[in-house]
Amino acid sequence: MDFELNPDQHAFADTARAFAQDQLAPHAALWDAQGIFPREAIAKAGELGFCGLYAPERIGGLNLPRLDATLVFEELAAVDPSTTAFITIHNMATWMLGNWATDAVRAEWGEALTSGQKLASYCLTEPGAGSDAA
Image 1 (cartoon, rainbow, N blue to C red):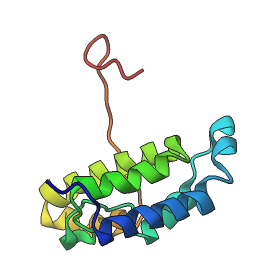
Image 2: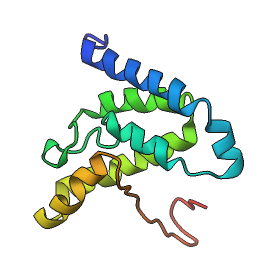
Image 3: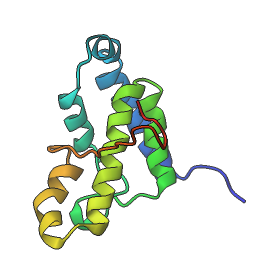
């Protein structure tokens, strides 16, 4: 079994590492300390395709395998775990929209989400049960 990354995987990881160093590293500590949601940085991540990593191509996503997406997340999280958490949640919600939303919803929201111009998330409420997210 070959466990070496292919050239595309290396390129994704290298791009994510450079983005993290340039766009996240200079600000991550301040964002965390002041509770700043880095909207502009996430939009810049979207310009690189990082807001639709495994979302379907029909909504503007890259349709990458989860391993390839994980390589991007790993590089981002090494520098800024908080912002990366937002981006991973956005990717999950965008993937769900791309796969299970109606055509009308996909048409309205798909490319806005995969480009990072709009953001997606999810709600979790499990008072007294489940994962106790609080």
